[in-house]
Amino acid sequence: MTRNSNIRIMVLPSWYPPRGGEFFREHSMALAAEGLDVTTMAVIQSSIRTHGLKNYITGKDIPKSAGNPTIAPGSFREAYKLYRTIPCVHKINIVGWIRNAVSLAGQWIRQHRKPDLIQVHSSIWAGVAAARIKRRYGIPYVITEHRSRFVFNTPEAQEMFLPWHMPLLYEAFTNASRIVTVSDSLQPKILDIAGSAIPHSPITIPNMVDTRFFNPAITAKSEGSFRFFSTSSSKTETPFRFFCLAHLEPVKGIDTLIGAMKLLIEDGSLNCQLVIGGDGSQRHILEEQVSRLGLQQHISFTGALSREEVRDQLHRANAFVLPSRFEAFGVVFIEAMACGLPVIAGRSGGPESFITDDCGYIVEPDKPPELARAMKSMIHNYHSFNRDTIWNYTINRFSPKAIAAEYITLYQEIIKSPL
Image (tube, rainbow, N blue to C red):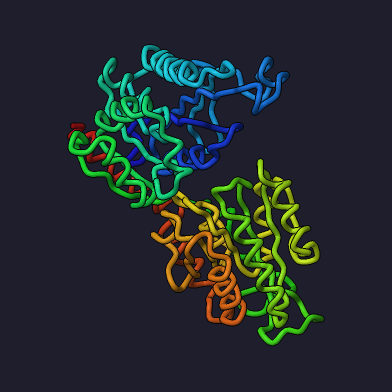
């Protein structure tokens, strides 16, 4: 028995696999690996628009374990409940999701011992459910906020908050024992919503990366720390390979990246290529942009990638680039860094809190010339970045063990003095 084995945690995620939220599961696995007793209660939303009529009706990709948790990999328990939303009634769907989350958690609490604490992933909307569970059962909770809309530095982010959201968010934040944000950039908006009614000032604990899965690979094309590339390359030599991975949505700034690549190619002295991974509503528009600019030989799209395919692309790349317009944290950056890659990020909220000069560059979003200069600098100064330095920094700050230790310390403080 470990020293943490008597700490019982219920995890309440706002979304969960197979509908996203893989990092919530990894977080639970990290806590369980350190000896905590962890049970996850996941209400998974399904809609006709996003999942199709057949999946909406059958829910066939959701394990049938409501109220009867199964043992998940990593030695923690998971319970699922499918919630089918109704088209065009957003507020009713939110109320229904919250009610189902409270019901699922309550069923477990009545049948088993109460947890010492609830770990909430995102206030929208598991934080509201946790506030109501606390009111009914007296269980303290921690909210970890991941939502990039709280960065609130663009009109797109501001439009994601509706007036009737605010009382619900106020309820979630003011009843939490602690609020954790994955970067400092989320805190001003949270304080704007709840202000002095929050019992404790928010703290920051970053996201984690599975450093056992994402790690450097030395291939036959590698020389020293990185895949070989000569800064004196000609058009006949190996091109410098940038990799980008994102949901292809406006917030990710892929249009800016394509514009920057156009400037690099027009420079004429650089041999480089860009591989864009992921899918989304903007893919067709972005592919048309590439075609219109005549960049088909320099930019390729992979579509959606599995986790293993993402790692393979990172191992084949020289550098990672993603100029997001706003980003709560940016897990994909630390996945790239765990593979030893230098990175280029947009000044978007999260990335500037952890990307150091040793790891890469930060640029202003929506400025193709500035991004192009950073990419050119990355090519010319490539060998000044040390794979082992980037890798060790990532392990020490973002490994599951490091992040779990920060949470365990926080949990112990709350359990000792919950209010």
